[in-house]
Length: 321
Image (cartoon, one colour):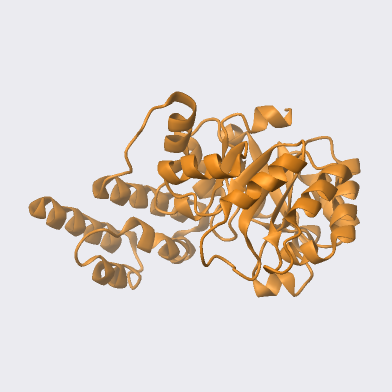
C-alpha cells in the first residue's frame, strides 16, 4: 500500500507502551475501519531475542497497521523491520519516547540529540524493507534544543515516507500544553505527510489541532483511553461533517466490560484483570462516588464481582437521572 492509502482517514492511533496492545487495537478497529493503527513500542533488542511474542499479534482486519520499533542499532532495527513486514503495512521508528529508561539507553527521544545516528537508522531500515517507513519524534529534547524542523528534513532525506510529531519536548514529558502551531513550521519544510500528536482528546481538539498545525492528520494517543470510539468519531466529523457525541456513562461501562473480557481471553483471567486496572479511571468517571468505586474495583480479582459492581454503578446512576 502507498503511504497516502495508509493515512487516507486523516486519523491514526498513536503508539503507547503497555496500552495500544492487540486488544485495544481490535476495539478501535471495530468502530473505525480505515484509521491507521499503530502497535505499542516494540524493542528491537527484545524482538531479536524472542520473535514469537504476543506483542506482534494482529487480525486480518487490522490493516492499515504500523508496527513501531525502538532501538539505536541500525542493522538490528532493520533486521527486525524486515521480519515484521509479514505483519505490518508500515514500519515506524520511535524517536520520541521520553521515559528515563528508554532515553538512558540512547533510544527514543535521545536520538534527537544524535541526528547522524537517527539518519543512519532510517537509511538502513529503508534499504531493507519494501513497505513505507515513518518516524515519530518530538519538538526537541528541551526548549533550548528545538531541532524538530532540521530533524524532520534529515529524516525525509534519509528515506522516511511519513512523520508523526508529538508537539512537546522530551523535558516536558506529557505536562503542559502541546504546541500545535510549531508543527506548521515543520510542515512547511518537508514534502512528506505529517500527523500532529498531543492533546487530541475530542472532535473539537482534533479540529483545532489541524487548524493550528496545518498537518495532514492527527494521531490520537491518551484521548482513546476509555473511549475506543473517539477515532471513528473524529473521522466522521473531519471527512463527512457528522458530529457524533461522546459515549454516555452506560456506553463507557459496557465498553469496559468488553475490554475486560477481551483482555482476559487474550492474557488469561489473572493477568488480564491486572492489566485492565490501568484503564478503570478512564471508564469509571464523571459521576458522584466514582473515585470510591474505582478504589473497590482495583481490589477485585474475578470478573463476577467486577460485573456486579458495574451493574450497581449503572443502577445507581439511572436512579439519579
